[in-house]
Length: 127
Image 1: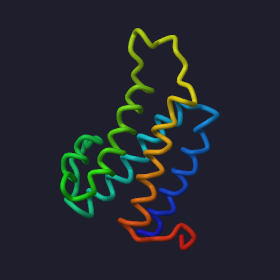
Image 2 (image 1 turned 90 degrees about the horizontal axis):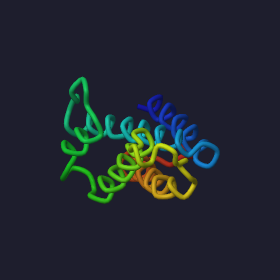
Image 3 (image 1 turned 135 degrees about the vertical axis):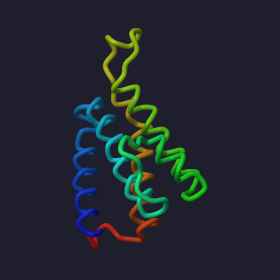
């Protein structure tokens, strides 16, 4: 599990590095980090997910097993990630701004904090 944690930390650091320099990439990578974390929690809590598991699959299976605030944070990341990847016809000419990523930055921070400090009960400096 420790090697998984190091991979997750690398992905999280990479994700946050894009927050201000490329908000669209940040939204996409935030979704990927969320899926990675939820996948690991799902495997430990529920069992092996199906081949085409999605954030929705994980959240449905984890409902009642993880704090509701974590589900809400994951949904924020999912919603904004969808917005960033699947812009509507009306939004096609709009750039995703730093203000657009603020809720995701907060939600991802909350998810990461919960995962390491509460779920795994690890301290960043121990890794």
